[in-house]
Structures are given as C-alpha cells and as structure tokens.
Amino acid sequence: MRKALFVATAALALWLAPAALASGWCGTGELATDRLDLVTGAQVHTIVATPSDSPDLFVADANKLADDVASMSAWWTGQDPTRVPRYDVATFPGGTCLDISYVRLPQPASAYQGESSFDAVVAALENDGFADTYKDYVVYYDGPSVEVGLCGQGGGQFNLGGGFAIVWMSGCPDVAEDAIETHELLHAFGASFTQSPNDCPPPNDHHPCDSSLDVLYPFATPGVPLSQQLLDYNHDDYYAHSGTWPDIQDAIFLQHLNTPEVALGLTLSGPGLVTSDLPGVACEASCTTQWDQGTVVTLFASPANTSRFLHWTGGCVGPADCVLTLSQATSVSAVFGPMTIPVTVSTSGKGAVACTPKCSKHFSAGDRLMLRAAPAKGWKFVSWGGVCAGTRLTCSPKTDFALTVRANFKKLLPVKKKR
Image (cartoon, rainbow, N blue to C red; front, side, top):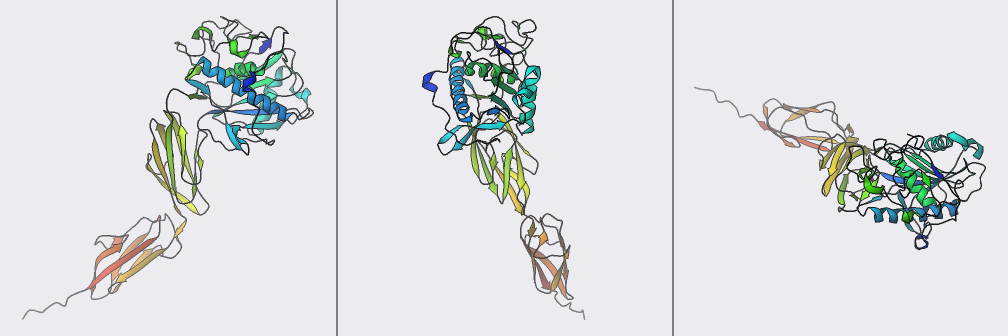
C-alpha cells in the first residue's frame, strides 16, 4: 500500500547525523544482489539505487546510509529499549556490517519523475530480485529530485515483507536522511493506521497529527534533528498503544532486546541443505543459529544430487517440513540417505532367498523390497539375521541404507517309522 509523502515545509540549515556515529560503511564492492544472510528473522535490507544516466556515487552513499542506520538504531532504542529494527548484515574483509546492495536502475532519471516515481523504482528493484517475503527494503535513491519538496516515500503491509522505504536524496537537502528513513521505514512496516485517534484528515491521512515532534508527522521541519523527535507521541496511534488495531511494536522486523535469544542447533546426517522460511538458516553442515524467543520458523530439507531426504529427528519427527516455535533452545537433525544402496543376501544351511525386485549392489533406495526364504529339499527355514528378524518366510525391510540379510536354514531330522 502506498503511503502519504514526507514533505519539507521550510528551508533551514542542513543538519546531519551525530558525529559520534559517523564511522561509515565497512563493506566493499558494488553488488547488485542480496548477500548471504547472517541475521536470523525478518529483517531490513538496504539498497543504494541510481538511474542509468546518473553518476556512480555508491561509496559516499553507502557511508551515509550506514551512518544513518546507526543513528536511527540508537535513536530507536532510546525511544524503546526493548526493540530495534533488525537490519541485514554481511561479512566483509573489514568486518561484519550492513549489507548494502548497489542497483543501477534500467532507465534514466526522467523515467522516475512525478507521481509514479515510487512505483517505478519499486518495480525495477523487484524485477532485480528484491522481493523477499520476509524482508523490507530501505532505498537511498541518488538521482535528480523526483518532485520539489518530496523527501521520501514508503509503503508496506503490517507483518508482511516486500515493503519499501525510499529516501529521495536530492529531494530535501535541508532535512537529514536518518529522519526521512525512519519515517518511511515505519510506513514500510505498515504504519500508520486510519483507526488511530489522531489520524490526519486527507490528503495527509495515515499520519498522526497530534504533535509535529512525532517522527511520523506528515511534514518535516528542517533543523529539528531525529534525536528531538518522538516514536508515537503519547503512544496512542501506531506504536506501543492499547488500541485494537496493529501495533508496530509487534512488527516481525523488530529485534527483541528484553528477552534472551534462544539457540537452534541443527545437525545434518548425510549430504544435503537445510534452509528456513525466515532468513537465517542455509546450512550444508551442522550449524547453530540464534533467534528471538518465541519465533515460529519452518525448516526445509533439500537433498544433494546424490542423496534423498529421509526424515527429521529431535525437535521435529517425520518427513514433512519442520515447523518450530522457538520458546527455548531446540535441536533438530535432518537425515539424508543415498540414492542407491547395496543389498547383500547370504544363507546359512541349504536354501535360497528370492528378492522382488532383484537384489543388487545398486538397489534404488526407498523402493519396496520383498524377501522370501526358500529352503532346499530336506531343509527348513529357521530365522532371519541381519536387518530382518523373525521366523516368517517373508521379510520387507526399509531400504534407506545398505542392507545385509541372512536366511538361516536347518536340516530336517529323518522321520522314524513306527514298528
């Protein structure tokens, strides 16, 4: 859903993020894709985007974006010590920091002007693969101003991924981007709601109108830094309120700081890959990840080319997708087996074993196998050994792994004739 605009109403002195947070971006390289996820849970991915005919200023923009995220995160925890937006990070030679993608948009700046600018940029980014179900996106658009006085736009649905917060970097040079980003990210999270008591009248609805210091107020006053703005003035509109409409404090994109994280230990037996619906798990070997307590996550097992998935053990049991509620530390094992197995059959005594289908060194794992013991004349079947057991003439063992079966036969005693 497209939200209302964040518009500057005056031209005062430029203000920036606090100097103490101005450390820049530790990453390197211009990558147009989302790097491997290190953070668990629904999260916010950051992008620098430029039109095809605009200069490449990625290094400066990435440094600015990283500083703004640090500034905004510090401000957020100052407003609510129990929550902070969960940002996507990646590992670089210089350390672990914000994962920032760089996208050179397919069209010139003229294609992103006017009323359709937000939709045009979002469509281009989604076409490039930025459409994860469990990610919202912050975009720093570095191109000519799309509309006079337009600082940013944002839109999204509550607790659904795919929301976008776009900062038009040339739109309001006298308003700091960390405040614009915060405002638009709240819209990407699904705020504000028309049910709130202080919702502005149209055309500024979806914004609270009870205080100009509210970070979601529809108009920005340059010269008022983010540090002086509030996350829902009086807490009765969109954050930490007591109403019946959604509360952004409950958004899945916020990390919980007031409860300890819980560990999800994953063991892989055999070659395969385990992934999760939420970002955070992509393991080809045993791994441990940390999650917000109470997170509901689904695990998917994908076999390698030479294996097949058999079942889960531990926190989940059986072959279906593994759905977990992580209320405490949990361990799960994914068991993979080979595509083919050797089936070795032997006998003790005189007799034979008939296999349906034929037993071989390359039996198709998982196929049904029926073994039937056939004693020779003058012998009787006694029992099975190996993976089969019992005294019935037939045995149908599981064929997930290599099988060794032995049929035991015993010579019949001669029958004494009565005199």
